[in-house]
Image (tube, rainbow, N blue to C red; front, side, top):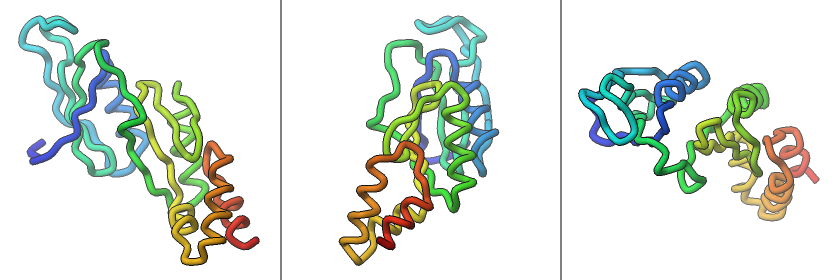
Length: 159
């Protein structure tokens, strides 16, 4: 991967598993080079997977098996714009159904603790609607959701 800017994500020995899951789940995602440690290091031994190059929806990433010192948190998330309820459901269910957990307003975490915002384009359009009263109704509807329900957002716009 020759990229001027790459997102480096810290894992506790599971970078390759995470990269494979992302490549199987998200379009335009791949697993690239896997670097095995040339010697022992604090979080592993010579020959263990040290880094994994991968892309998530075209975004270059590097998974680093750095050990247990650092955990993912909501300060970083991938925001995925979905086109319809089927795509929203498929991605949400893949993340949550693979050991992840639901959160609020379209957010969820994968089993590695990485946060994802599964955000239908309809929601983004609704909360930026020039009719501020309609935008507020859509926003208020979203605030009560976990996975975004497009039909409920559209209904809130029309009230």
